[in-house]
Amino acid sequence: MFRQSGHLNLHMRMHTGEKLFKCEVCNNMFSDHGYLNRHMRIHTGEKPFKCDICNKMFSVSGDLKRHMRIHTGEKPFKCEVCNKMFSDSGHLNEHIRIHKGEKPFQCEVCSKRFIWSGALNRHKRTHTGEKPFKCEVCNKCLCGDLNRHMRIHTGEKPFKCEVCTKRFSTSGHLNRHMRIHTGEKPFKCEVCKKMFNASGHLNRHMRVHTGVKPIQL
Image (cartoon, rainbow, N blue to C red):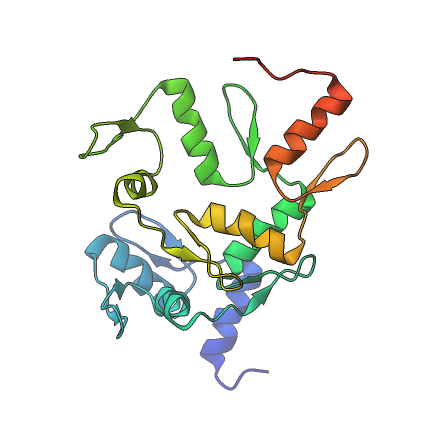
């Protein structure tokens, strides 16, 4: 039930797909005037929501709410398979793909598939040769994460294990390390069903089935 007819009308547009409100800049259509107002901040650059801790600004309140979990450490979203906790529902959904083996992002050149769109974008640069990021310290050009590379020079290790306090330069290294403590083994051999805590271990194991020998350098 709805207390106001306007709320009912808005709800009905979810069923009808009706979109009455138009962005005059890019012509996108919206079902609610409030959605249009939030969208307009993309064009205006307006960011009215401010983090009181680090002063970072956001265009929508939901983004600020998710950001605050970085400071509070709150992780309200739980994986029902391995019990890992996440601060964002989107991160949980991406994580679930590891368990399902789902890889929705495919390279159009070599047909290799990826769990994350970012991983696909980085992979594409192996075909194009594009290296858009340059390190100002060693002049190395990179196709991927420049911030991660810079930690080689600074020695910074911002990611800390809350169990044994060991520190890591990348979140990926920390995630792999955490499986030592949790016992999580998200990588499954489709031949013999054996489970592994790292994709590299699974790849090495697959040679047992394929008979492929590693290249001798």
